[in-house]
Amino acid sequence: MAPVKLIYFDMTALGEPIRYFLHYSGTEFEDERLTSEQFEPRRPTFPLGKLPVLELDGKTVHQSVAISRYLAKKAGLTGKDDWESFLCDIAVDSIQDLKATLVSFHYDNHEESKKTKKELALSTTIPYYLGKFEEILKENGGHFVNGQLTWADFWFVGLVDFLNHMACKDILADSPGLKALKTKVEELPAIKKYRANRPAVRC
Amino acid sequence: MAPTVKMIYFPFHGLGEPLRFLMAYTGIEWTEEIISLEEFPAKKPSYPFGRLPVLEMDGLTMHQSAAILRYLARKAGGLYGRDKVDALHCDVAYDTISDLRIMMLGYFYEPNKESSDEKRKTVLEELAPMYMRNLEKLVNENGGYFVNGQLTWVDIAFAPLIDYMSHMAGKDLVADKPALKAIRDRVYALPSIAKYVETRVKYAY
Image (cartoon, rainbow over all chains, first blue to last red; front, top):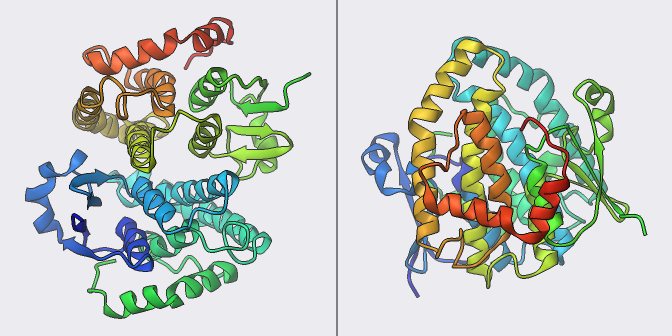
């Protein structure tokens, strides 16, 4: 079988959930990490010049959420039926909406619009989304979907260090349910082993 | 029997239209509840995450338009490709189109005019052309569809989405993209969709 290779930056962010899925499912893979300097000359070789990409069965695939959903299906992490798969998708897309809010000021080069957006995100949007996620976890036995581990749990936990980096604070400080979920996922044997040995990251 | 499906959205085609197209294509009848921008702040807390569109189906409240599209496509059968790998490619294609749409939202809804103009320039001069070239190549490599030579939910969603995106771009984004234009035209010509489009309420975008 063709080797599996993940190419991403030396960051957690969008690569980390994919690394979690691959380790959780016991899939051997090459975990290639690029610094910004290493990435720039190779940028035109990646679809749309972006990372992550996954080399799978001799083909190069991009789009972190699409890749994650595919790997999650193979690992049995998409719920037990179409409705639960849908609930996983809703959760991941809602997490992505929160991330998009942070991304929109973090990468904004215009000082004024950056400041306005950051203030709104920190005062309103982040607490709103985290409050909603806490409610969902309370109603679902500590998980995003129906009392079971799904890829939505992995997605959030894998991404949260990057969300904290963009917010410049620990966004889970007042979110006990999400904190407990983070611990739960990070204590899974395959994830714990990976985290103990993973290379240093910039965020 | 009255439809048990209700779509709640603004008076726009926008992000609601792909759902309307897919429902029309798969034979789901629905009613519409249109929320004006003035009414929205008062009603916002009643929606799962304070955002629209929301679809109420058989007593259940659904939100997140892409998740709903995926769910309806799975339920209908035959619109998600032949296997898990085709499904992956459907998801890749749709998310790529979404990425471009989100970049355009970044300037279209930016209230700071200077910031909006700067972002618009970058998106329309550099990013959108690259994305549109990539999508045209993808369709040419897949027999005139986004995935593996067959109609999927991605083609059906693309047709109204590219109109919305063209409005944000101020020009027809597929004017010089024959393969993508052919998908849009083919979807609009599907009988159930043509019928819906003929009778739908027309909004600015």
